[in-house]
Length: 362
Image 1 (cartoon, helix red, strand yellow):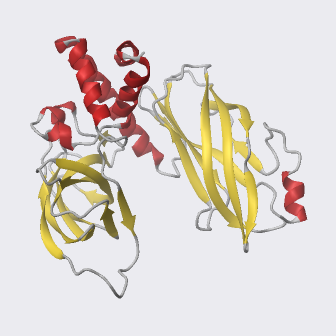
Image 2: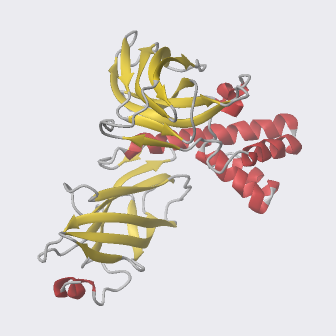
Image 3: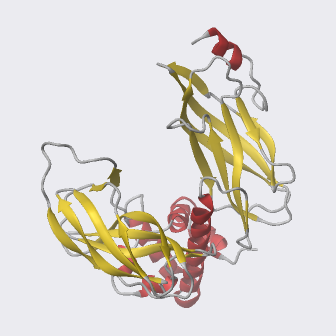
């Protein structure tokens, strides 16, 4: 390591706000820094670049008059270089005014190796979601959509479990949580990988064109009119899906979920296809897959469904509780992060801990 870098990293206290690592929160914003512990964060030269391994614990405080449900931080080593920036989002919070909370940072970033560099990494606030679903922040990493969807899914799932407890009792609630735990740790989701770039010139399985089945969800503002894709072993290529806006508000983003049929006919969730789109009411558009989707095993057929919709006014739609009451859909649709969290809470601490969680939040 160069002498300038050793000098830069030497003797940096855990809560330093200058030097190689810095937290920059807006004055008058809803959160304030209590402490920053940079732990064993390191910076190592790699050729003409610097590899920054960031391992930090931040203690933040809610200094706003509202409860905080989610926070997103933007982490930047270099704005332009590939791998120079990232983000960390902490959903599922319930932080009252004046309370402190922790955010863990574990990222690997790259930046040019420049002796004149001062701050290696800067952490900035990108967004805060409050309990009334209002949002604060520049949203430069487009975290608002995901934060809002997580919160809507969490509220939906807590209400579903609370209604199940009220109507059928504790044993029905226990059975539902055990059902979630019986699926794999990702909520039954088949692992997938999106492969960018052109196909290799040799050893490419030609594949076959198949029609995509479209699953219709109740109350969805968009309808998937079907589509097609080339299936080749474990890969889906050049997918095209026709989308219609059957609501009254223009749509600017859709996330289309993949469902893969298992040998017995059961549908298994397998990732999503996100797409920016401009879709006025009553109009149709085509979503095209950028790259190849590689599934964990060969697939024979694919089904698609609307997993998330964002309107041009910023509102977000996620599948409602009624979708889980349709025959076969409860097993097909992926468990949300909140449902997985509550199932794990049951496994570790028992049913009473879950009952306390699903009671109406303040």
